[in-house]
Length: 560
Image (cartoon, one colour):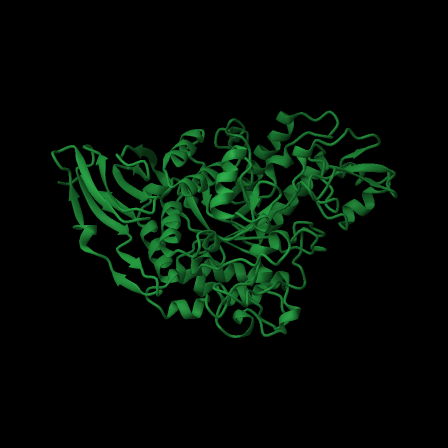
């Protein structure tokens, strides 16, 4: 894989059933998604990550899979999927899909057959006659399930499940299971996908409950998956969901011969800690905590995704700081260490802080990920249960159901936000596309500039010293070129001195050149933003003005 396309990709995550309904049955589908590809292409998206769309009882938002070789009939057919992939490719958009192989649904034919002790599928799952007492830290959903073991009357034994009891874990140590997984990968690669997001990767290689299995043996399967993937499609990638301690991250990357990308859970948590404190130290610490990774590998950075904002890798006191700043009510929290809100409500709808956060996301070393609706600043519905608060349908227009579907509102697959500041009549694609000062047009501009700065995705990152603790400054260099980004995390303006004699001439690329007024209109900012080009004062420092929550990107001009 020579071009490493994922290093400078713009990834967009969505759930087919909540994106666009084409036939009026209240459920999003592949035909509806295909019609929306021009929206995604116009925004600048280059890669789509689709949540599970397989047949499922939907106990866990489709992550309880009944059939790995088909499309949920509510969402369309395999023919609809192939047409979607073709149309996406025509627009230069790659497609990643979820590979959910840590567990299946208990309705999967494999598990139903495995309940018979004489079945060849018995060893597809992990069984015990006398399981040990469960460690609560092993539960994916604390306070929802009490144990990772569930007794099955028909099987006459307990089966292992790290998630809901309706999701029995597969036995990855079993060669027949590994072969099934390779077949699943081969099937979807043949239909044109560019890779897989490996769900629950840290549970996938956990030997708990598996007789005679060792951690290193299970880790080797990650290499087997990579080898198989590359043999079928050389430019395909594996993206792992592995929220683990820094010293365990190398398990998933190997020497660049396992996963291509990892979600940067740790940096995400430190970023929110820095935003809560309005100080850069936590973000600096987060970047320094991340281990070095092989050059072929990449971090996938995000603000929010389809689950809760998890804070489990920072201390209890640090979690409380973030709760107090962004989720002070218990109803806004989940699982003891998570937040079930989207970003705009967390920031009180303050446009400057929203822009700052996404500017930071897109400039951090790695590849940026957007969740559907983030381009228009969608909100959440805390009246919904659990994670569903951030899984409402896409808001396309001010028409009924936000233009998502023509079905009666009570028949929608997911709720639509009707009332308040984030209701579909106030926040939707159609209205924002007509407004030059809207978030969606700002986001499109951000994406365009980010594509012109491959140094952020491919280069080596250096944290730069400043004289203000609220300002985070960093530089990324690649192939002799460099870009610098400055972000003022505080609610006060400042003039920051950047000690950067190596970078004598800076050319403005992107920044908060306009301010967001209380009435919701854009107005010209004062001339404090200065000239388009900065030169070092006294040969060794820059003095650069930043507004409250201000951000600036510069290209280093080494030609002068």
